[in-house]
Length: 276
Image 1: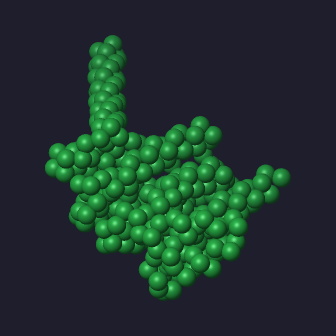
Image 2: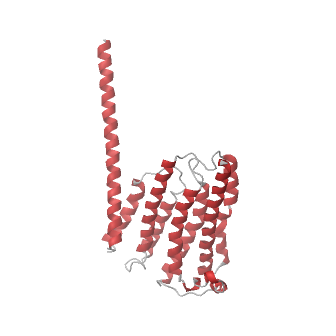
Image 3: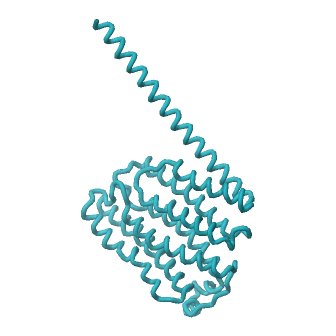
């Protein structure tokens, strides 16, 4: 029964990833007008092969240290988001009232009749937001493998916090001071890619290595680009607090280890003195 449940959850999570990956790549093809971009689906196309290998080679339907399923999904959506964001940057238009052939084909379907009213910027924002929801939900649904429920809950909370940081980076792209700055946008996309590539890691992650790059990026935007709003200040303060708390934790751990080392040394000397 447990094996059947794991198979069902494995199918459901991979279907969720595949569906979002197809929609994301479809939007890239729509914006670029080039069918060659369908090759971006190579990642999610391998999910069925990956699932078969995972179910055959693992006891709990999940690998211990690394999730190939999440990696394959990200190998599709990360390049797609890059193409979409760089297309928006190149157009320098907050809303491009595009009416492509693909969208017109969907206009007669009642449930998608309003899709062609969405501009590229709205599409990109929606795909980015749902991508993070899909990652958290998919990680929650997929078999937890050898992780305990406590470890899984900690990992999901880390993902939610990381997702909030990523979404705020995308919001900064809309700021007047940043909208046309190619270097800042590319650095932001690189930070987004680096952050997402931590999602395939199955083990619970620490927070210092996640927040420090976000802090440096936001401090640059505030000081150099003069991007100052409530969300920017809030997330900057949040990154500062997390980094300080992590440094404090490292200091406490090192201090306790040194104290235990001194205590063992004293105990060893006391035992040697009594022996003599």
